[in-house]
Length: 311
Image 1: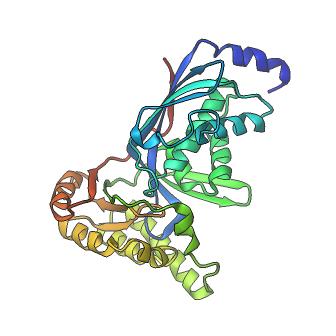
Image 2: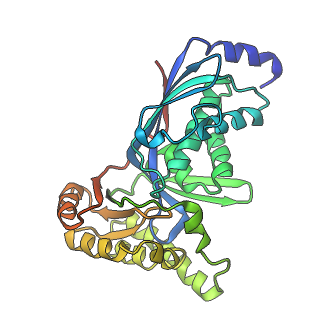
Image 3: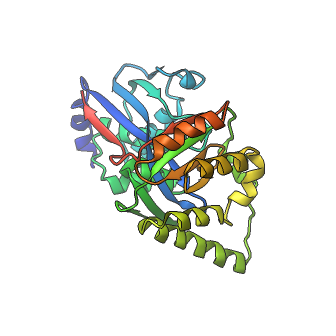
């Protein structure tokens, strides 16, 4: 986009109000480290319009600790995205609500990144393709699994090799997600710090085989095999489990209740339980009785990804 087009593109949004909805996501599913992701029907929702100054209105209590002006992370992403395309992001009034638990391994930062990119796209007239948005989001997040699920919806397989990002949405993979959310937070930075810098070749080979087998089992609905592969992860769960002391209890009770597999959701501490299609609510209800003091949610896979509209 050249400089002559900028004023017209921006002026077109002067009196418009846009709505943006971005789903939560869970990544890894055990051995699919920084590669597998699934969109969940918990949402970050924004309404935005042009303003004389930056204003952020939090409509959810969990968002109140964050800045109310352009220092807000979502606004910073929007400003940075506009700068990448040599545009100046106009000041906005943005109202934000979210039912995505923060610091629980549910892609809250990925959803914020995708929302910020969408703001820049809408109010600077960038006309970005979804793939271009994925490239920007993956660069900012560092890996494509969460942001890919947020953008595209569904169950995704992503890879990032240098600057090259690829993503595949697998429509054939279907299951009922049941989410167990503790009250405790676990920052991604803390969870990343416990990972090894190097994995030896035999372990890496086995870990890769387990990840491949998980994907094959999910695509062919071999539920029991998929569950075994989820628990056989060698990439990250063995190192992160000590940070989540209740994981083994949740895993045992989830399997007893009918889940076929469990895994740390992203970096944790939430636990994602995978259930055969149509059985999720029954498993969740049973787990609510067995896991006092934790939130248990029967969810669905969001199939739309990020959606924006003019109000």
